[in-house]
Every structure is written in C-alpha cells, then in structure tokens.
Length: 149
Image (cartoon, helix red, strand yellow):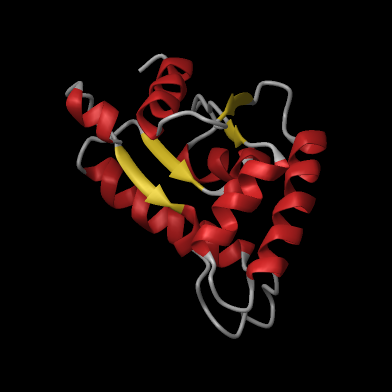
C-alpha cells in the first residue's frame, strides 16, 4: 500500500486476518468462511462506493479463495494471487521473534504445514515472491509489478 500511495495509485487495503475474528464460530459456519465473505462484501461495497477499483487483500490462504473474490467483487474481476514465500529457517526466525509466548512452536508447525499446502494447492497463476533476505519495500515493489498497477 505504501508503494502504491507513493506512486499516487488509488487502492484500498483489507487485512483478511480480521474478517473472521469472532468467537465462538457461528454454529453454521465453523471455519468462519461465510462471515469472512459477508464482512469482505460489506467493506468492499463501501470502498467501491468511493470509486475504488483496486483491492489489496492480505491473508495467507487468500490465494485459494478465488471463488469468494469473484462472488464479492464480480465475475469479471482480475485477480492476481500473490504468495509470499520464505524458507523454513527464515519463517522460524520470524515467528520466534514475533511470538514470544507459549504458542511459538504451534505457529512454527502450522506455518510449515501451510507452506507445503499452499505450494501444492495454489492456482497455477499464483505469483510466488521469495522474501528471504529482502526488504519489505523490495518485496512490495515486486508484488505491485506483478499486478501491473
């Protein structure tokens, strides 16, 4: 978003991790996917009413959710799924630096599992961006370049 702002490119940003933060999960939506879609639809409606046409949606598994984005944003929307990657050592170092409580090992295990899952199941058009040893700005520029924005 900062790279786009600096270039004067209109866009909006949604942090997908916040779209399903309800406990307990709704009984009819145990994986919270329906509430995620409803919340995204509500937020997108507000941004679209302001004339926004570019959405940055951050969430690790969002590359697997193309159908949801088409339902919310429209069938003719152009989606550029981007998957930020890191080797296991980099991921472990980042997670242990961020999670200093009792959940560090659980996060490390889940991260390794999800990395393998996403590597196998991400759609073929997914842009994979290596993050090991790179700056945030450098990574962001590569993602923006992939979108053509």
